Every structure is written in C-alpha cells, then in structure tokens.
Length: 115
Image (cartoon, rainbow, N blue to C red):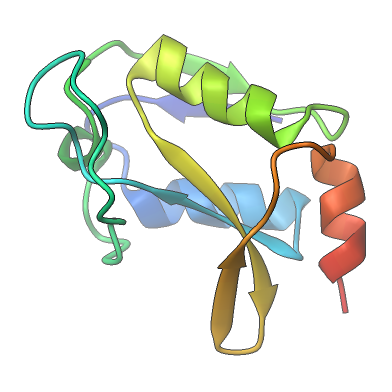
C-alpha cells in the first residue's frame, strides 16, 4: 500500500487507508515539534480533521510504502526520516487504544488484534 503524504492530507484519511489494510490497528500522529529537528511532542493529534501540516515541521511531499512485512519500528522511522512525522501504532480494542511494541511486523501485530 502506498499513502500520499502532503501538508493538506487530513489525518483521518491516512488513518482510514491504514486501517483498511490493518483492521486491528490504528495509526496516530504526534503534534509537531516546536522547531525543525526538535523532539516530537508527546501530544497525539486526536482530531482526525487536522492536516499533516499540524503534525510536522518538514514540508516534503511524496508517497510512503507500507508493507505487511515491515516492522513497526521501520514504519515509524520511515515516517520520521522521510516526512518529519512522528507516528504511533495502536491496537484497536473496543473504545480503548493501546500502543503496540515495535519489534513485530505489521502483519503479525494486526493478526493478534483482529477480532
């Protein structure tokens, strides 16, 4: 799956694309750092109507390829290094979302949480 990245994309659109491929998981993004190259905020963007511009200081556009065989840490590093986005992957569990570890692949992690 390839996801288009640009400043005008809405967070919910990326979340929907991601969840279509991995129904047991959700992707979230941290608010942007206070300056370019700074540490990401610990605050997650909770409103899906926000844009990627609200999540990053780098304005590069392009596509990111997400493969089921990727480790979660690899995916998070790709978002950060290529597009300045600090991503977090969560399990979907009723009304609760819990962060998942970085060591398993997306396919393995999704399989654990698909109902």
